Image (cartoon, rainbow, N blue to C red; front, side, top):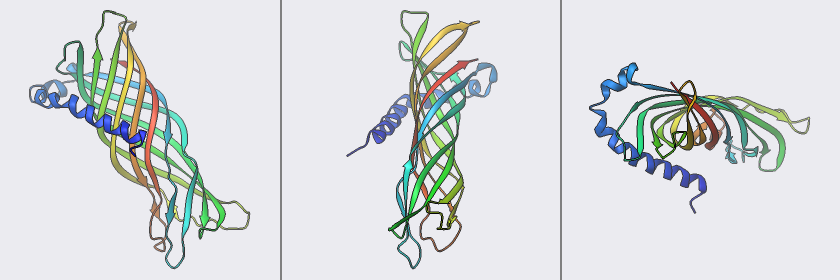
Length: 251
């Protein structure tokens, strides 16, 4: 059965491909505008997000049964910042489009869990942190209506996410077992997608519009580096995603 997360990712990819198709035909005539700062619109973004990361997994050890890493805390929250660079694109009746690049920084969220050694003894706890740096080829749409006060907006993007794992820490739960310190942080890249919807309030302050809305991020899967060759597999973050509330201004 397809999960809700997988459905969201599939919808984001399909809608992005549909919206981006005319952008490529428009691209050849608009490269100058994209490279010209005087034609570009800068979008500054700030918000908060809740990330879901981590998965239960078995880590094999040569000559032994191995350990099972379970997760007791999947979710964590933090603030995010973003920066977009857009130029006007072709419209669709009442829909005005912009195309460009949109980068985000989703800092420091933690995953916590327990380690079941040899599949029998829950002697250790662990935690680690993740930082995400997604960047997208993005499309931003604005749906016009009879009101000059607000417009409905939507955002779509496909790209890559740089995943930085760090701060791997193990601790004894029984006061006797010594931590293994089997993993250290790593930096990797993964496919990423985003989709969002919001409301743009026009002329909030000195003709500067303010937009607020919801964003979904699929962030991909990160991993860690092993500290010993006795391990037959490495710890992974699992498929990560985030739900966010984001406000932005266009300058």
